[in-house]
Length: 145
Image (cartoon, rainbow, N blue to C red):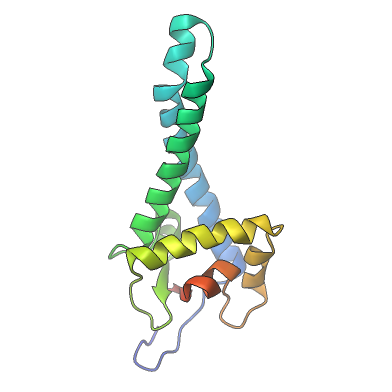
């Protein structure tokens, strides 16, 4: 990566997919504990599940995913644990660290990428800079470290 000349080694689809799988595993572990803390004790004590407790755990799981990705990608590390494991980082178009706001935009752009049958993610394999729709919208890159 040479930031002065703005030449980057863009992270490809499969490398990014592998990082995603690692991150989903990490989020699943976190969500297990969220579910255990908020939903299961109620089941054990009363013998029945309360819908509100389940909704609370879903909301907290969503917040956990948002905080995990946005905080990690806008941090000095510029990557989630999955991306760190594979040596890739998320940057703005100049190769600099993203702001928290830009990281939020990228996160919520992923919802759009998913909602159009995943096409926004498949774009990674076909664009010159290996950007998904959410990357283009947030004006960022995912590059090899």
